[in-house]
Structures are given as structure tokens and as C-alpha cells.
Image 1 (tube, one colour):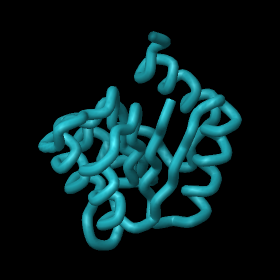
Image 2 (cartoon, one colour):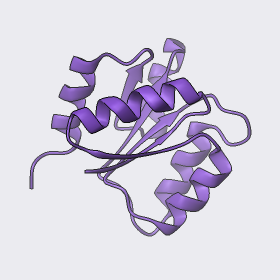
Image 3 (cartoon, rainbow, N blue to C red):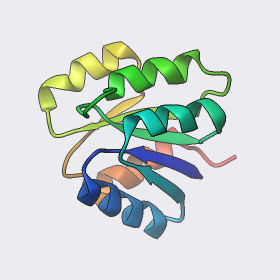
Length: 118
């Protein structure tokens, strides 16, 4: 699956990309939320993993752009070390919330449910 990871933390992007590649997916990682917005508007992704707290546009801002866009992904997942955003993310329309640091087993299960085999 083609997965876009948006996180302003370079290490978090790198780790998530490596894990997703290990799981057999095609991740692309962006650290700039404005660049991510441009890509989301132009390209189709199967899944988008969004950090919620970033300079400029937040993950919530990007989720609104995804919803308004022409080609919605199968799932948009919030990723954050701020557990207090868990309910806010669900109410905003994220498919799931993933705690940082991301655990491999939890991510694998999430991907299996968010991106069922076609």
C-alpha cells in the first residue's frame, strides 16, 4: 500500500518509514505540513499517518484538507505522543489514534484492519 507519513520529527519519520517498508508497504515521509498539504491535494494515498502537533498546519488541519479533497484515502490515522488528543482525534474523524513511540505489533494490527486485502 502507498502510505504517506507526515511528521515534523525526522527521527519519527525515519523509524515509521523503516517499519512500514519492513511490513511490505511503500511509505513516503514528509516533515513539512505545507508540502504535505500540496501532495495530499495532488496524489492518491491508501493511508495517511499524521502527526497531530506540527509547526504550521496541524494534523487536524491536514485531515480537513483530506476530507475536502477529491480522492480520500482508505484511512487517515493520528499519530501523537499526546494521549489527551485521543478522543479529540476520534471526534475529528481520524480512523484511529496511534501512540508515540509506535509499537510494531500495534501498527501491524492497525494496518491489517485499516487496509484490508483487496
